[in-house]
Image (cartoon, rainbow, N blue to C red; front, top):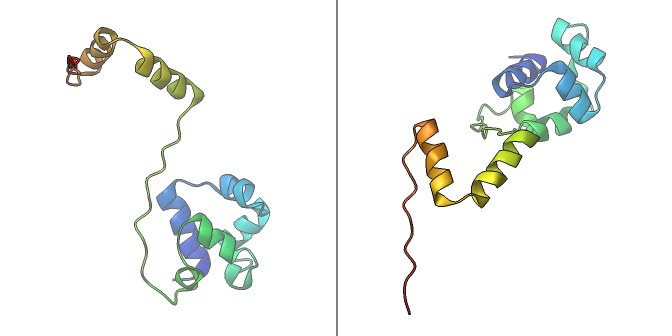
Length: 117
């Protein structure tokens, strides 16, 4: 498999667009497009170490010298709205939390009884 094919495979597996890779690594999106259509090859690119780090693989993997590929860690990106809801949930009473959990079809939170000294 060619270097460009590996890069585009990693992009697809990780849900990364050409635009996002370009923006995150400060690589011209037209250069990435040239790799994709075979007009240029990224094999000698100064960007290979950054691309390897970005996808948590080795440069040797990108170059086809090493076939071991780590399982990518799932990326969880929370929106500001999701963060705000999580904070509100954490601050809520057990009754409110259980109402939310019932609504979502999740098991209720057990009420912790305080130990008396």
